Image 1 (cartoon, rainbow, N blue to C red):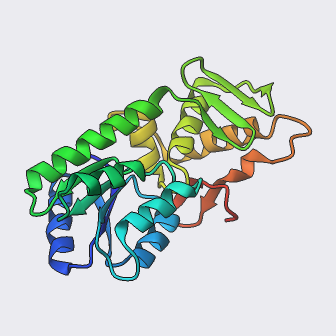
Image 2 (image 1 turned 90 degrees about the horizontal axis):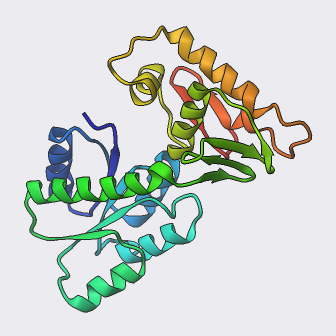
Amino acid sequence: MSTSTILVVDDEAAIRDMVGVTLELAGYNFLTASNAHEAHVLIIDNKPDLVLLDWMLPGGSGIELARRLRRDEITTDIPIIMLTAKTSEDNKVQGLNEGIDDYVTKPFSPRELVARIKTVLRRINGKQKDSVLKVFDLQLDPATHRLSIEDNPVEAGPTEFRLLKFFLQNQEKVFNRDQIQDLVWGSNVYLEERTIDVHIRRLRKTLSSVEGSSIDYSKLIQTVRGAGYRFSVRPS
């Protein structure tokens, strides 16, 4: 079952409800928003894995919100599928020029919607799999299995390396211990809760091992009381 979170942005409650049921049956988590402002707040706070964005919205169009997301470093990589009744080539070209990943034209079937979501997520995840991950002067290269801070090599064990890669690919999201276990170690592996905490402590120690670094990267792995852990460049 997927743990991806999809944000559905549409001013029609019936469409939000229908899409929500479709996503839930397909195994996705979902959030909903009825306008551009509400959507932007949810995106900043939750950083969903994909946004289903209606073109026509009150208080600002979907294309304007997409443009804003692409300008912001925090949200620039979030994939966007437009839900639109606009079918002209000019509209699609405009959307593609703004960084839209795909279109679903209303009316659409639930099967088509889920298929397009899966395709976009698979394409995005494939790009992320081996791409260099960077936050400030911390750099993790999955292909060469190298980790560095301010160009200084950092020695990390295989588990800590995999855990950091997971956090870097899912920044700003909160994960409980069970989710971390399933997504990093696999659902067929049993670990005690304290084992996750031990690896988190080891990873923090690894990230604080570079003397003289201008940033204490260990503090970016934040403990969220009663919820779990997240990697965030924003204050906890």
